[in-house]
Image (tube, rainbow, N blue to C red):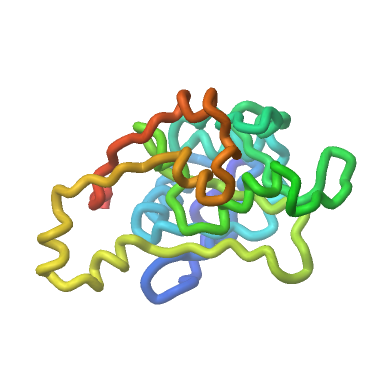
Length: 207
């Protein structure tokens, strides 16, 4: 059964960006009209929240693929893609459900997510979007924070905007993880992901 646009609702999460979309079950196939509204909201508000969507892995990947081709997971510790090559498991428990110590290399690697970042900016073609699905959520803590670079840009003085236009920045996966532990990636992984140049200012071609 397809979802209809007639039941779709949107609530602002912040005056400048982010909306919560209700009235849609993402586990079901979406008609083109409903998807068009979701795509428009994504380009307008940058951050979309859908509550109570008990995805299976396959259902999540099907919806995510509406945004574009799925990325292949970066393998640094050997088990990041144990669920699927296009999925990343972020957890503080191991395969047996035991809490991992902060000294565990998997926890050290994941701690990089606590630094402000744009997903996959270290790749020549960065991610267009990231899709997070909370499977086991703690009663408190564990929040994911988001920021709008569009809003940040709009708050800059015109002189600063002009100075930044046309500039490029070097994005280095090895440098980012090296801030945690210089040996975290290993030479082989570092060689697979050399530093790349990214435009410091990039406009959304849709909006």
